[in-house]
Amino acid sequence: MNFILNHKYSDGNTPIRAEEAEQLIPRISTMGELNEYEALNILQAREWAFSSRTIKSSNPLEEPFVRMLHAKMFDQVWKWAGTYRKHELNIGCDPREIIQRIPQLVSNAQYWLDHNTFSIDECLIRLHHQLVSKIHPFPNGNGRHARMMTDVIAAKFGRPEFTWGAGENLVAETTARAAYLAALRALDANDNDVKPLLDFARS
Image (cartoon, rainbow, N blue to C red; front, side, top):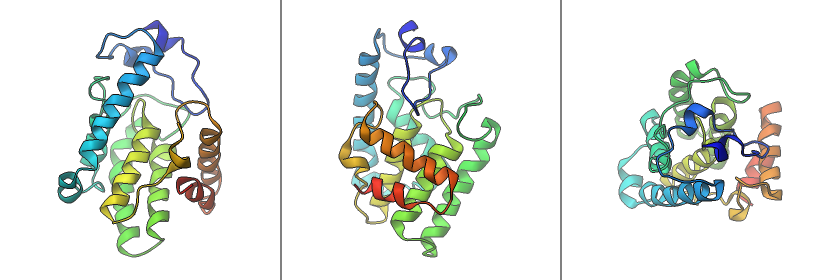
């Protein structure tokens, strides 16, 4: 697991801890292989998440769906897939608060949508920001999970998926990733500064 622990993580990526690295399922030896396994797992999760059956029968604005989606995205790679983190990070809330904060967030988002508090897009972008920046519930994969969550809810409400910088790789260091992180941090600093993230998500 040294390749995971010694990897130089880019800005905004959560390093994988030793105890988490020990729960890797496939036998792999490079970060490139890990990225390939995760990408394939995520593609399979996407097929499930955006199937007409899932869109019609599931409510993504419920806490169990939040965990289930993460599990579907990473369950062939990590044993901790779908499990909330138990350690402190320099981002997100105290891990002991996650189990209360997630139901509160999805309930708030449902209220915003039901009462037209904001436009649908703004409701979803605010949920996205809270999920990835303020809570950051999982040991890893939070950005990818939060983006897919946002897209699934958009589909549920008849909106097109977000483009997130026209499909750029937001995991590796890219100009699009830098713009995404800057937009998240602008909203961190000012709850009313939602436009940069909203514009990026639709760019």
